[in-house]
Image (tube, rainbow, N blue to C red):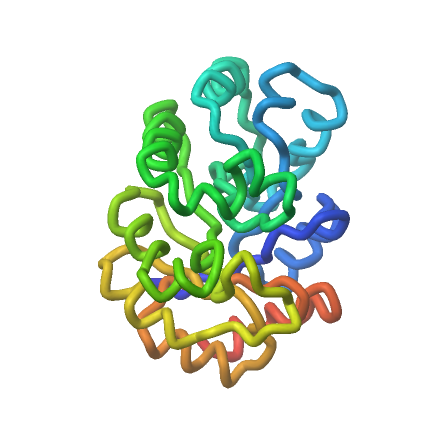
Length: 231
């Protein structure tokens, strides 16, 4: 299985130009900034423009939202562009406004709804991945909320940001969770605090599907050149 290098979606960072640059240096897959599917369903200009893919850089469109009718309306009028490589569901955003609405990282507990959305997207003929955290807090992490979702949702792959929603980027990502994630039999992509070739080598040896790099790529897009060095 080919080990994948992915550029993480980052607000006001992963513009089309930056995605193309990272792909040039070796990123196999990139992602748009997060878009609210409710706004896309309504055809709001700014949101629609944000998901445009102007070249052939492999790109998944990241979506957040929980209402099935919004997804249905959006998918009915969606027309894929040349670089389009599927959709990615945002189960990682920990903003209080998202958590109150039951979307973003709050969706990790909403396993049935997440499964319905993934199935709807795939039934429309598109790949659908999930980017997620380890649950809302330490308790949800300990009880394996994230594993319950991975086990019961048939996404194309799961990018697991190894922090809870309650944690900040100052808290260290917990790479120990990846063993249990991999044991689900699903395709798992590691995300969070990935900066060095040594880390990537270890993650590849552990049998993961790939790595998703964000902040390190923001500082140095050439981090994806590690792919060529790994062979």
